[in-house]
Length: 515
Image (tube, rainbow, N blue to C red):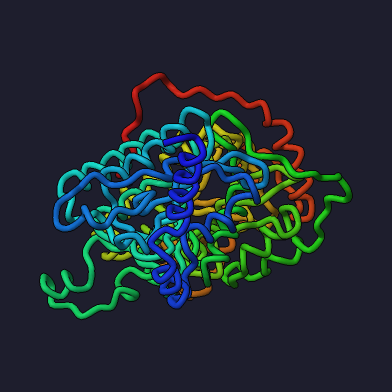
């Protein structure tokens, strides 16, 4: 074959590869309201920056008629490019090619870019849309999945890994997204489950749809598997871009700074957020949004375990991670789901050098048999462990209640927080005044002529002694009691002071977090 014919052949092969499973199948994809694998990449990657790898790869199986179904690229597009000028590696699964099923060659393409991402210290983004393992290839396909899972694990904490679920993700395919740092699902068109509705019906006799079993709504509200639920694929891709703007390229770098010009940092609105009645709820997001840079708060796991709020924001142009109790939901108590949600987020921020800001208004852990029998002890300990192990700059602001063991867990000075501030409205105690008074002054209350009046009197006595931040500040557990309006200014100064912090943990292979 001469050079001209060779170039013609190559161009023809590339054209075929670009078509994926063929125009008819692409049209079918559009009718379902879904973008094609290449359209997704075009939206995600900076224009003209994508460099494809493995375009001419085909599968190697010849069994069960696969010898007559060869598609260039073999159902997944892999390569690298830039997002906002920063290098990323990406794979986009193509459902129009054999249902996007994973083969040996397909897995090798993904593994290759993951290895390159590790070597070059850049994020990996997976656009998932696959029916699972290619059954015709048997154990070879399963081995391909395991190769990917192994890379996911090695890359964890080294480079950011983001999974967008654009269609089906079932069986073994779900474990790769589960190991990655963030999952984004698309409403009404994507789902994730280990076993599908048919298997569920056979084994447990439950009738359930794919959407109810593992759709975006189920995983964003019930399981917490999905960190973001997007209305459509374009929104999902925007979430990926926004998420990347808060995180560094790898564990040895810092997140990108945004331009910021210092002005008046006072926020008088914060003086009015916490109600005078300590039992009246308020929205902690009002505190967050009035403290951080304008419109910079990006909430994670918004619809799951709403009694705790986690997310990214910027303070004076610098990326921070926020963990905050939410008094507007279950009074802000810690429970199983909220503890796991916050612990996972804390560990991500610590792995990627993102300073932590914690807002505390917590009356304790949620009581009850359901919580105890489902291991609130070990699940609550996950959050305690995550904060204790974190070496990034850590600052706490107590806005109101900080009771019991939950005070310790929520980034207290005792578990290594660098700076702890408290508002004058804060109450730091073993428990609420009423419950404490009923225990401490039980005898006096019982013997009093008017027990109700005596209880109120003892409650007031307890409040004056303990239900305030001054006793804790006197022992150095609180560094400064501040008016709410000065919170932003104090935080900016504190993070500036901590920006060169070095904190080395004891030498060990790894800890044993209470999983």
